[in-house]
Image (cartoon, rainbow, N blue to C red; front, side, top):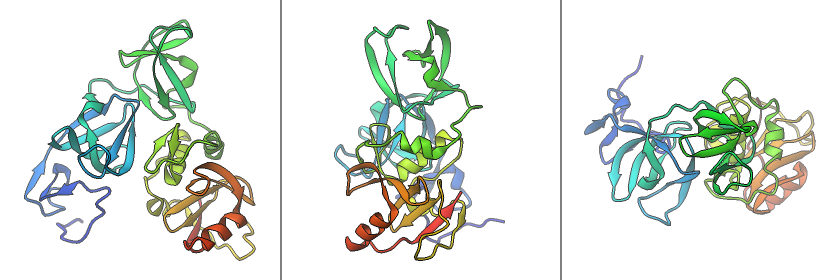
Length: 287
């Protein structure tokens, strides 16, 4: 049973503003207006999801090519609405979108791949796509796939939705040295929760966007002061931060200390983060 609520909700994943919300929340959230919205597809390699409708606003999240966005409202050169893949709400430049005319048939299964103007490795490069971007393949030629009526991608860099990476930690390791980017989810740069999310996506799992949401994944672990019993793939959480165990002693994480994705001993990370005033780990989880 559900009922209409006046209780606080998570603004990050609930499109409600100035009394307006998505039609899907009718009967659940009290609002002045319920809007059906329009679903558009991100046509840029990446597009920022911003905190306000202005260039230079804080980036909360990103869209990758092919990801859907439900538009609730337009303000100047920005759409306000909700990303349909990870649920995040915010403003995205209007120029990033096209009508939702194609159905994705494949996703980018390598860290980064080029889109060429012709099915030839010597052809000019139109753009670069990140891991987990969604594309529609319409034909093949010379080992390349024609995508989105746009250009050609090396076919072996794509995968259908029946095949995924076997080890999400290995996916995370492929991002080593990628610069830290607040709100980022792209191969060029991303943040701690973006690293976990994209790694799990590539392995065929869903994953929410922020670390406090991710702290509900899997099952809780009881870990003593000796940090024993941790293993590859376990997650370590601090307030506002997440890391992935690569073995029983080391973590990989996108972090502001190194300003990149880095591997380091867990004990050293705990000591450094605590000394910086962010405290001890808040939890350990196993997927």
